[in-house]
Image (cartoon, rainbow, N blue to C red; front, side, top):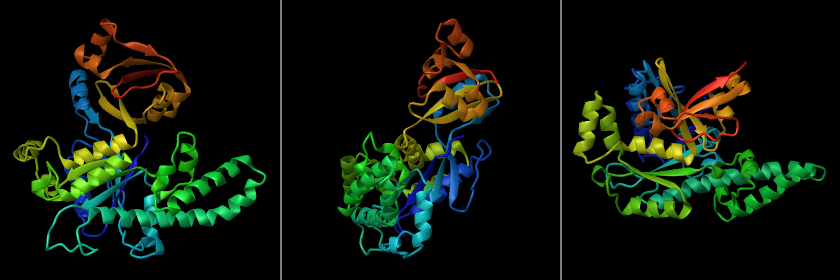
Length: 365
């Protein structure tokens, strides 16, 4: 199983931990259905909401449903000066290096009872504080590595290319911009290998007051404009509403509560889905009487590698894949119906798996 981690960052008192707790407790409450575990106090695995798997399980009469999971890490200790060791400084930086994407929680509400660490509510300034700390940490890490690499680059062409990229990225960082702005199709892999904090994709989560959760406010508007300009994801959430929902016992109650607020789904559900999209992930399913199982792969994965996510033997001995699209599976009421309608395809090693495919692997070990 491929693990994907989103790190939740934010300045103190923005509602980050409330959100993280709601995220993990709403999932813990569903632990009867889903395998849930908190690995450390600050790590929670949550199920990716996907209506499709319930439909497929109902058609196939699957005894068990196993959804996709994504991991959230509550990264503590980010304050101005973190890159210099302020707050939890270095510990914070090591935690954030291990995540695939960053969820930046921003305070977009006024409340005289909750002090803002910088003295005023200004989400754009908060983004800049966090970004500056990450940029400074990246610059420091590149400066440390460069002298050694420059020596090796004289005799090694590959390392010479790395040095060239580091110099490019250093210019971008030096101008106060994140490393992801230096990303091109050609240098994607090299940039990833540099393991820079600011090369990770970012999602902005605007924590707004309950009344602003549908239409936002002047603060979230600023963040939305910034996100659009950067091509980043932006989600509106009210940590207060999410905490209330997390405390409700039944799915019925949750549904009624959401309807009373004119909300289609929880903010957390939106955050999870956006995290999934941000990482370029798609889902395929294996469906049978025992279980309906969702699997995560990166968009563009070929059938043998998709099989390998289930078990390495499946990839090694891959022969072909019996493939039905989600829509056909539902339309023709399962695998047999799809087969009779001529909608079940045999795909070989070059097949790119599509989101929602139901796959049945044939392999020989």
